[in-house]
Image (cartoon, rainbow, N blue to C red; front, side, top):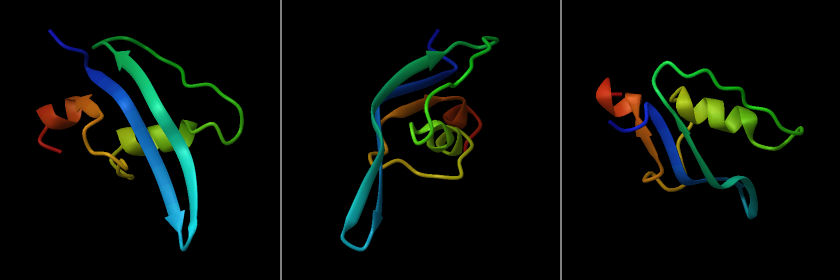
Length: 75
């Protein structure tokens, strides 16, 4: 059985005009069903961006990097 949630080489770039900010670069992790996890890091490290992607409130720069429960629920 695969992971409940899996990020593989996930990247997120925010663009405003000619300015690009890379919030995530090649992020990789797996969360198994029933597992607890904590996201920690310095300010600006991308924690909120990861949570927004997991919650469906933000999109990926490359749509191929996340798999898991979202597909199972048809989200």
